[in-house]
Image (cartoon, rainbow, N blue to C red; front, side, top):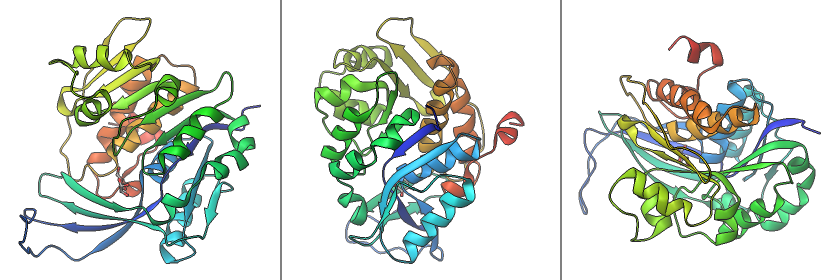
Length: 300
Ligand code: RIB
């Protein structure tokens, strides 16, 4: 039974954000703007993005029993995410230290904290959420052994969407379960190792040879390349917008794509829609606060 269009398993962070004119070099100090604290984390961002679009969404994550954890739970509930799978305690909530420059680009350092305590057993204990979900989406801000358990827990007929961020080499078992694996160039290079080739088409070939059923390579202003084991390759154009803050735009893209796949769209159709969602997200500050409704996507 499909109670959820999307189950997201992943991180939840308090994003501590400072605007800077430029990032400091090693040993240098720069002054930035006043600090702003936003709800973030790649997992929590994805669940909010999907729920804001109207997807029936659940989040499996771990936060601390602290004010950052409450900020994150409030944000999930306001967006309409089912937080029955959000575990509380064991360590302080994860924190992301983020600088955003005038072009809207960000640099992020994450202290995993409670995210690092989301265990394979937590995943096994949430079996009913997996049984009730059409699509499962995850990332790599939680322990790799937990991601392996997520891949094992996707039910027959279910679908796993993985954005391997921050990237690391992955076991075949995880790669073979991905449909799709969503990567940017940097992530593709880490996942595939040195044998990636020169063009995005080569990258797709190299990545598909590692086992995923499909791959989506995001290329910023150049759009995205969609490649399936059995199927033609499709270029998806980007949507031109004025970027204010790119934080969390990739999470919105992944969430929208996962949701639309669950609705029965082809991978290329879902990627076209996801590109529009990501485009709206970069025009607004923050991660979760920047995510659009379906009406706002239609108005783009
Ligand atoms: O992808 C953006 C997210 O990465 C931020 O919200 C931050 O928490 C880090 O996890």
